[in-house]
Amino acid sequence: MIVLVGFMGAGKSTVGRLFADAVRLPFADSDEMVAARAGRSIPEIFSESGEGLFRLLERDVIGEALERGEGVLALGGGALADPGTRAALARHTAVYLKVSFREAMARMGAGRDRPMLATDPEGLYRNREDLYEAVADRTVDTDILTPEEVVERLINLVVIDLAKGEVDRVAVDTAGGRYEVQVGRGLKDDLAARLPELPGAEKAFVVTHPNLAALAEGPLRSLDEAGFEADVAFVPEGEGSKALDVAGALYDWLARSGAHRADLVVGVGGGVVCDLTGFVASTYARGLAVAYVPTSLLAQVDAAIGGKTGVNLPQGKNLVGTFHQPCAVVCDVDVLAGLPEAELRSGMAEVAKYGFIADPTLLPLIEENAPSISAGDPDILQE
Image 1 (cartoon, one colour):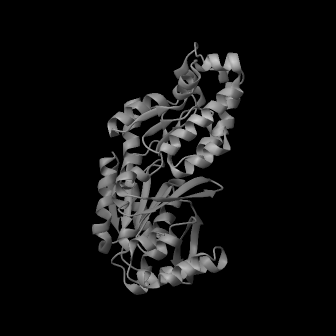
Image 2: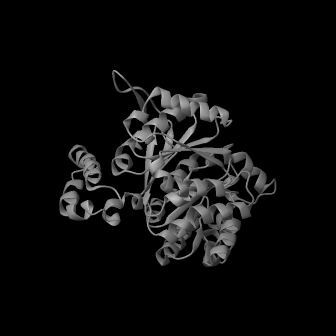
Image 3: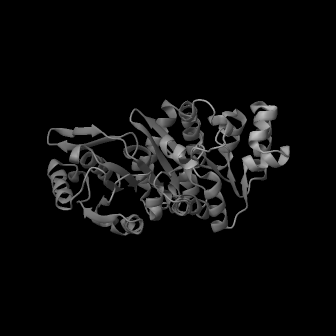
């Protein structure tokens, strides 16, 4: 089930109906279900029986809807205060329709009939923000979008995932914010739909090497179709590209192309490309957003994650570098299909290291599935 969450005024009911119609799924609204069960309007329930009864009814109708597990469900703004509801959302796709406090108040107008806004609406908004972000699988900032435009974003973000099967998402929290690592099959060809909101971004600069030109076509096409002015630069294959002169050539390319601080840099390649691309993105114009489409197993489990960037000097590796977290990491396991067994083994050695350090459950998984891993089985590699 696709569940829309967000503050009052985010447009959950309006967008939910339009979206459900567009994808031919049933639609339900938790507030409407509560009112129907109680035989009274929401303001009447609050005034006659209090918020306590409303929350009990809300929890019950949401639980029943989630149990049915089909369609589009719009949740009331305070529904996530219930821990059981938050836990139940883990089995569904939650989309946070984000709206600023100012815009929410403007949309509801002076005559708003919302019991929960009677006292300190801004405090209520701030208290609920973290709950929405905690459960969200995807986020759409609705402030400058029409309901129809939000529906387009939802189709790109959600329906593509449903059509292609399971996508595993891992949220990475850093001092500078959160980004998402997505793992699944066929993900690179809709890269643009897997990026977070990038306000002001107009251009996308893809860095790869000539032997990966075919793999880079999908991300480039996706970015172009999403409205980015997309371009690509090829760097030589191998460790020699992690050098200041190669970084300088990329700076020159960005400058000649009119890159500005809101634009996006994308690395499509293995560890060398990710390290180099991240370094250039972190240092050009004092920092551009960077996303990675890692094409080796080692890059998917190491180089693309953690924000480490760098280039080499004659005196040693990675002596010049930065920490610059990506805005997204898209790990398409299909690109691993043609890798030599030696490269798969190299990547699995890093995974085994993680098992010894932090997660011993990885070790029997590797041991029991060693033949499938060596054969490049995409389902095992995704797991």
